[in-house]
Length: 195
Image (cartoon, rainbow, N blue to C red; front, side, top):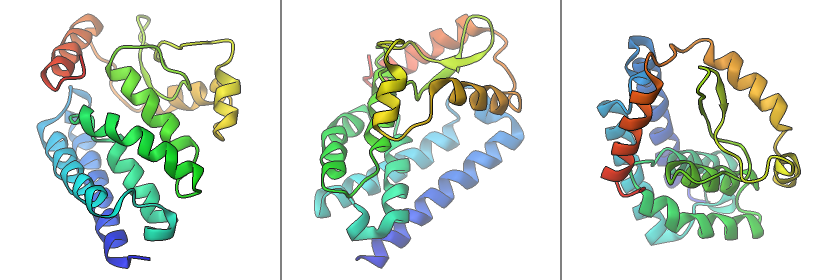
């Protein structure tokens, strides 16, 4: 096991969470993709990509469960790097087969990729404000089977997750102009090659 890589991964996540909390406290986190958060995600994505190129996916046997979870979170937050997320999806899926990653990790990543590509998601892990101003799962590929897909990767039923997400969303300010927010998000997604 590489304790040094694990330490680096945990430090990267700690910085991510510190900046996120700071921006949430000022309200900047809820006004689009805050430049300070984007910079942390950029730095972490580049470091993770270098690790993957040198060692492969930092799985449980290499960096421990905590380190593997940190690597996944860093990848999940690398939204400004679609090529990295797309490249790592099959790597992460293979890591699951080898017991090196949690089954839910590639499910979250696959949904995240689909969300930013504005395609329906499979597992219902990605949420956004709907037209009624409620936090809801983004468009689903198959609403009838979503709980079956979720159960297969160890996720709770979608109804439970919706309740949690809406309770959490009560702590956030709702966007005042949902159409403007969607337009800005699409422009950003195009600018980083999601669309």
